[in-house]
Length: 48
Image (cartoon, rainbow, N blue to C red; front, side):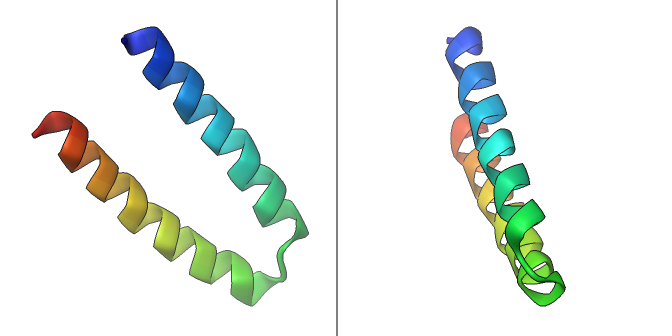
């Protein structure tokens, strides 16, 4: 399971990096906030 989680996280990170690279500054800020909340929720779900 750790291998799957790591692969998933790295694929998500690479997609997010592409999004951030192509997004305008305001969009980047909004995406960063949304992503932070999403990761927090996902981490809580995985841990809980």
